[in-house]
Image (tube, rainbow, N blue to C red; front, side, top):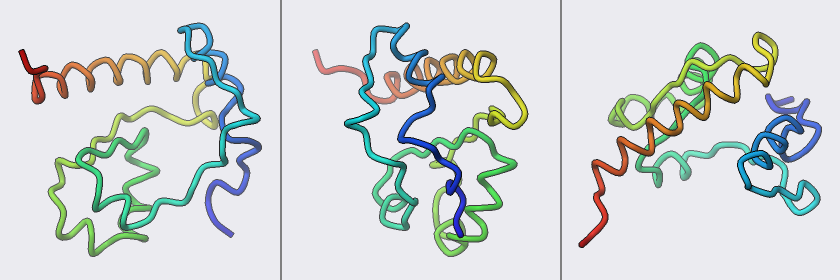
Length: 115
């Protein structure tokens, strides 16, 4: 049995509603279920975001210890946002949006648009 076994669909209803409020439509019937992270995903990523270090860092140590040992630790960014077991979606989603805006600003400074 693997984590994520309790996923009841491709996207949480609260997330789909929050995206819709921001003008982003999501059709859950066309979306796929989440996929299990693989080493190839980590190796091909320039930047990795995990929402909760206390949950995801131990998983990374358990599943990908050799990758963690050889990878630049700055490639993984932890946002410290609790899951619905500790915080309501109405509280978590604004925190995620705030972190996302900060990430987009940092990435745009690293990769400015060409003139």
